[in-house]
Length: 269
Image 1 (spheres, rainbow, N blue to C red):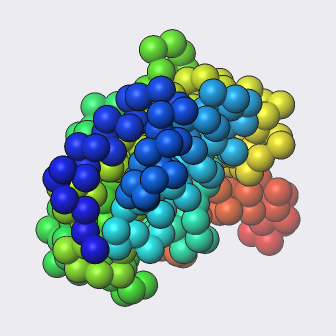
Image 2: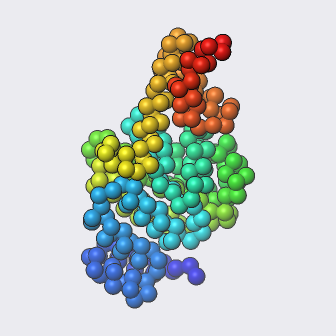
Image 3: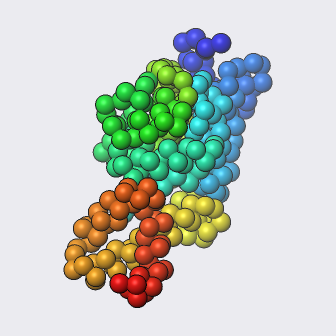
């Protein structure tokens, strides 16, 4: 049964109250949002792992937002590359990757520092804002999406990102869903600020490490293309991006092949 506006107001009060008070609210039959916020508050106080806290955030969103089938977090690194460090299911990463390759979509739009606070579609198959991503998501069985922006930290590297929720149902997400996602995205933002996501030692202990690996190998591939073709860095990256779309592979995978096999490819010419 959907919660009333009165229930939602009560949940927000529980969120800003003391941790023990929030726990008490959850214990006497409060809605899933109050219970998840009480747990997240406790986790955040002792947070020492970005991956761990973000995992709690996506699980909380999955439990507290009606209609949520998949949840993920998008992070945008200072050099503009997007990646998905945590998700509730690998399909969420696939849907995110579709947007990264297309250069548009709700998680890309909201993860930009200048992007909107949230983006939402009730029918992805017919969504004019994302003509490449929308139909591709619908082909995979997902009809609705809601992405809410993470708040960049006040100090460098000011990572930006988004909390993404996907549903197989059309018109799955209401204004209340949006408000819940915004509150949960605030928790994710606080976690990022507290735990300093760019520490390489931590990245090696989580699959956020893949983002640094991808960035390194893309840089190598760009250098190879620049030398071979006499083009600039932007042209080299655009060539990689277009080729990845044509071949339907990730940019990082294409770059890794070029970087590790370029001598073989030279011999074959």
